[in-house]
Length: 145
Length: 188
Image (tube, rainbow over all chains, first blue to last red; front, side, top):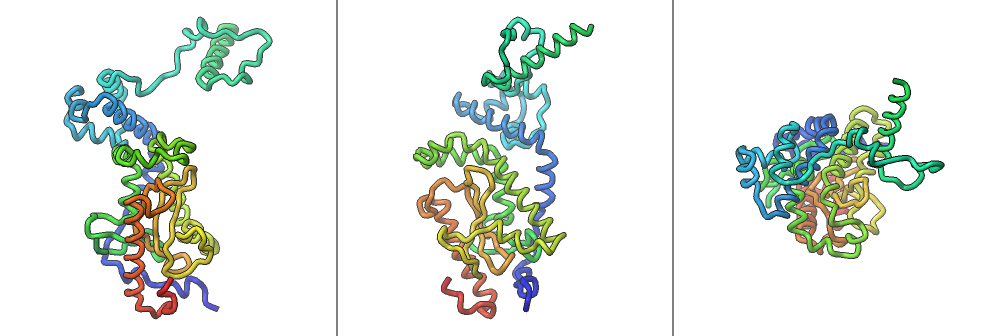
């Protein structure tokens, strides 16, 4: 009985010599995933903001004093942005592109744990949970200091 | 549109057509596009009307564009895994490409030769498609692909074109292999 391998067609004979480097590209995308995902999210945000305000990539290039191809690279989601570039983009577009969790010192004035209440079972947002965790850390630090 | 090359993606198993109006294989072209926020944004802007359906209202269609590059990543990883299986562990060969691709018709269950087939991404909503002609067990030739926004392929110009490409490549392959492989299956 013949196996699939033995009866497989020689599709390679139809090839005219072209090749693909998809494996290298795919492996690179996988390696870069932690920052590429964020870069793409920023790209979509830039595109959305430009569309909402009726402005173009050329306008944005002018605002940041860069050439239009640079802006085009940003909206293709392949740019490993510096904090400086993100800050300039935020000013030009008038939006937050990346948010940093607030300092724990500020949270003390905003959040306080109600007595006898399990704070983590009340459907609190992830952000609030993080803020509350920071608060606990500050308290334990003060206690041990 | 003419076929200018059949390019190996997983040598011996998975191939992709390259057409005369493109400079790379359909497989390479599609993954580059799906990973490009500018292209995806423009595509969804151009096809906004297809998202105002009950299905897409239920499935957050207006935010679908943000998920496309991530879904493409997952799809690509799945193909990388198949590549690793086929190149490293032939005992697992039986369940790799024939799992990735299914017959195009929803009521088709049997796998046949020269069968129009589709590969989908794994995560909901399943809107990324690679289209291919199945030549033999574990042997496919990719003809194209799409971000599928309508249930019926004939209801969107892009997927309608993909149907034509599938048929064109199937005919080309039938001619190339000169019927000696499965002459009785030409009518599939």
